[in-house]
Length: 334
Image (cartoon, rainbow, N blue to C red; front, top):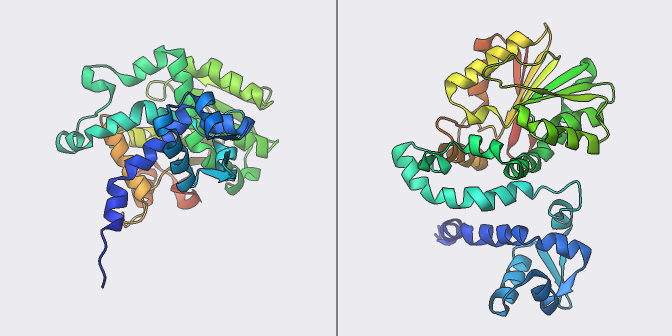
């Protein structure tokens, strides 16, 4: 068998490609190109690029498959035109903006995190990152927009794959901007929805819901899922929430969900669920490493793990269903 170091080198140097894309998002390159494609000289001026690196930067994005170059004119690909143009509702660059500003530097501390078990974010300096985040409206809005971006594909899949015809109400726990409850209620006009999050999120949620024309059917309920009862609804949803917390908190949230649901009600958990063999979903496993860097006790988990916790909380008929990419949902019935 011929051995090659290619995959080792590509993975070891993958941060080159990552930072190239993140810088392009930071400079809003794809949004600019959606307005007007341009040649090298034009884009240097519009983006404020120094001549020394501009051509290599743009051509690297071509080689990586994020731009096209036709007769010297750079333009978006169908994917970047859809998902990285800030003027479109399909924009998902918020998670990349947050990755660039926060996660990229924090991941430099992964080795330390692996040896100490300690987070490597703002908490290293004695700060609670969530307290600081929720106290700054601009940072909070960026964070919530990032959550929508990383979740939208799975949110749309849940709107299609779950049997919503059997239910009348749903509540999105840790709702952020409210994209999950928006996608569900847009797809199913008979449903009414609730977004549940800390009170500071309320104005941002209300703005987002209004832009989708859902203000009459979707409402915000402020509270903490640690100290307050969960909303009463036929279906409770936890999207990219459970992995933030340690095992005790995960189990507590599932018990609270069971208590809040009516008989026959459902809980839907979704994250980048790790395959039971823990050998296939690399994104899910690395997301768990991200929780190591970002939280005191959070971790991602397998479908079998979550079904076990659900059954302990009293749920029946638990099953795992793939959504999109690395994300799957786990459904339990009361």
